[in-house]
Amino acid sequence: MCVYREMYRSIGVSIVSVIILHVIHWASVLVYSQYCVPTGWQGYIHSFLTTASPVCKLLMEIQYQSIRIYDMTLIGISIVVTHQIEEFAAAYKYRQPLAEVQQPH
Image (cartoon, rainbow, N blue to C red):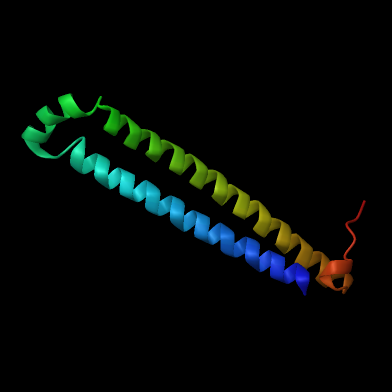
């Protein structure tokens, strides 16, 4: 039962990480679009002054890094899910409890 507890804990941490990263990315995009590149002609002219500012550069870096980590987290979750499916399939095929399944050589 300890194996399942650790698995559920990992799944929970992964889901929370994805949600936090998405919120960070979404908020930085929202602030960047409102402050650094507002809409309309005035926003177009305003963006010449604000786009290269340190605040806007920081917001762009946060967007880039958060989506990069978000992508890697989703890839990692996909690998774990695939591995779990393989374990369940092997356990079903050999009719053994999950903890006792041996991988074929």
